[in-house]
Structure formats: C-alpha cells, structure tokens
Length: 206
Image (cartoon, rainbow, N blue to C red; front, top):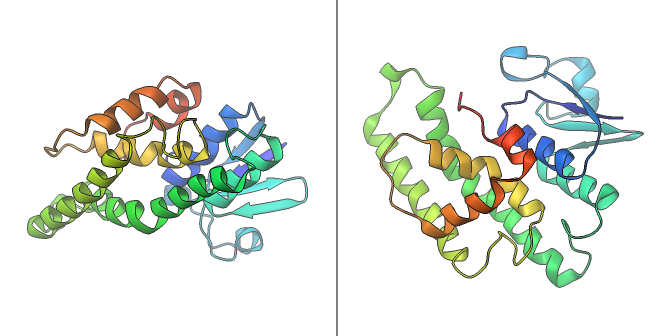
C-alpha cells in the first residue's frame, strides 16, 4: 500500500490525495508538518532531506516534491490520459506544472500566509494590497489561457488540473473583493464535481 506523508490541509499534499482518488489507489496517510511536527526528525530526513511534505512511499520507491509525485503516480497507475505519453501533449502538462511552481505559487502563497497565518495586528495592509494586485494579475493570465480550452493543459483533464485545484480554490475562497474571471470560474465548475476534489480540495482555509 502507498503511504502518504503529510497533513491533509497542506495544499501540496492535497494534490497527491486528489490524484490517488482519481486513480482509485489505496493509501495510508501519516500526519506530519504544521502542528503535527515531525519534519526535522532523522526518520523523516531519510525520506526527504529537505524536510518538507508531501512524500510518498510505494514499494521501494520514495518520491518527494508534489509535482514529481503526481508524475510518478500517473505514469505508474494511470492509463495515459492524465499524463500524455506523446511529447507534444506531455509538454502542455509539463509547462503548466512548471508555471504553477514558478509563477502562481509565489504570487498566491504570500497572500495566503498574510491572511491566514499572520496575526491580524502584524499585517501590513499596504504590502498586502500590493501582494493581492500581483496575484490578481497572475490569475488574469490563467483566466485568459482558459478562454481557449476547457482544462489547464488542453481538451482533457490531466494532472495539471490536479496541481491547480487547491490553489484556485484558495483564490476563490479569499475574502477580499476580486474581479470576475469567468473562464476560471467555468474551469472550477468542471472539476468541482469530481469526487476527489470534493473530498480533499474543498475544505476551509486554515
């Protein structure tokens, strides 16, 4: 059985849990990280020398970095639709996985931490306003991209959509006023009916 190391409300762990549901994989999960601690232990450093989640153990394989985990599981257990075998189709998935890491996450995470992790009395409202403006600009690019296709990497649901699920959920859950992004809203509507999304992605922000 697959073992998933990581707390269930971590955005990077959520990606893995959702994909396990998509692939109908049995797994057990160990709470580490955040209030559970355990990341700086010798046991965990053997699994991931960076001391971060998620990590999975699958037979003799130990895989860390959330998008690497998605690739591994999709290649090992998927039929090819979630992670295309042909280079052109795969490159569409790869570039959006990279864009999530390089562009979306660095814009979204500071806003999330400012709103949900920093004490209210320590928030710099001017700095937060700038962070929100930067994030909104990034989201507008994603919305424009989705005006031409139904899913992140093209015409079909893929691990790229899994990677974006919780990030987009967080964007729409943030309490500040935001412009309408109809194509992104339509995308979220398409994926929100999937059982793994409902089970793991759609949860309160903490």
